[in-house]
Length: 232
Image 1 (tube, helix red, strand yellow):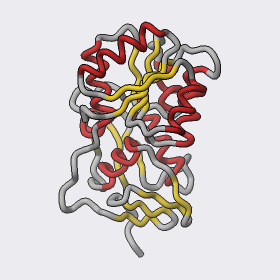
Image 2 (cartoon, rainbow, N blue to C red; image 1 turned 45 degrees about the vertical axis):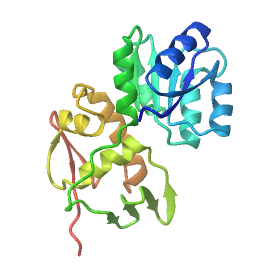
Image 3 (cartoon, rainbow, N blue to C red; image 1 turned 60 degrees about the vertical axis):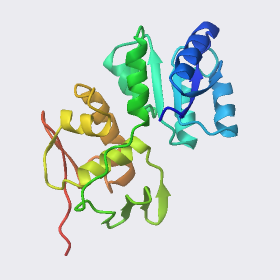
Image 4 (tube, rainbow, N blue to C red; image 1 turned 90 degrees about the vertical axis):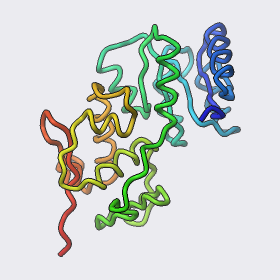
């Protein structure tokens, strides 16, 4: 997606200039914002394919900006932060980020993360369901729509890709690395905290009781399994 439109959100002008120059030379269309408030205005006014969001900004801050963007859009969000602790990554992912890049980073690494955030999981084989009916929850993978009790529930692209891959392999234990490499890309495999956060979010959205999941089951130390209840 070399023509993708990227919004760079950072309060430092020099970083915005470097990002713009680098991304434009790679074929991306680039917009920028100095803070979270300006980023939200631009996202309301224009269509972007991805947001590069710095966490350490004045004003409403990167974390709250991430939450606000996610509350109104399913646009991929790649967070940039100097913090490397797992709790910080989990907080950002829980706020709606698709990926978390720790500063300092190399430009090739960042470009790879951008490509991963923009990619969609590979098309599934002919046996994969187009529509999955789980009683109260209906998942239409063809139209990428999910409804619970008739009301539409917004899933991010990564959430839907993860759910689709799990649902296309019912009753199969899928290892963490396999899930990460299929949904995020071949450069992933160790980011187990990503899966934990995304599974928690999916359970909140589609499970009748997220604390006692019926469909999205954890296989301790190994991965996850999608349980498809038998029709009665």
